[in-house]
Length: 218
Image 1 (cartoon, rainbow, N blue to C red):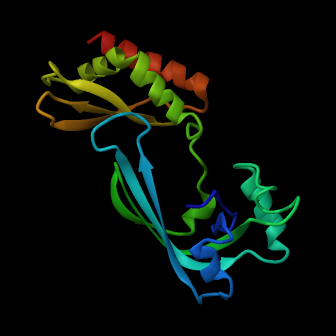
Image 2 (cartoon, rainbow, N blue to C red; image 1 turned 90 degrees about the vertical axis):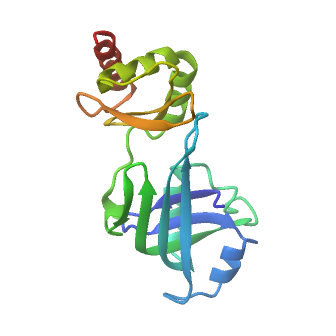
């Protein structure tokens, strides 16, 4: 598993891996399209809920070492995610190396369905503003506001909610997804869209208040 990863402005994926890893050894002498590789990314819900895997993505392409003048630029990109100077041996002998995956194909299978993604989109996509807060916020909602999350079922129209548990499953700038599970173990997901995309945690608080207020008036 990479210690860190990031995406370059050109859409390549930069991976920080142990110099002793199989990937690093295989890529040591690879040139251009010599070595093909697939990265599988699994998205697991940060709360206790049936069927916790929210999605998987597969990125296939060509793997090489990051060399020469590219090392400094790629290290700077990785450093935006986590400190990497010590791992890269900037203060001594390197224990980790950087690999580049030139992406040729992307497949995604998640809560919205399965589809192929144009690799060029990887270079232009922006992270969701909630990505760094989602885990903490979902865990807080599940621990401290589960009754209010369950009240959102009122927004779904006529539906039997007795004995149903509700757990917040996913959160992004556009809305909240909740998994409702009945006594018999059957479950369904419901998506609650915000009135407008949220830009930060302050926006999110207002959006959640609006959702809870709407559910309370049903």
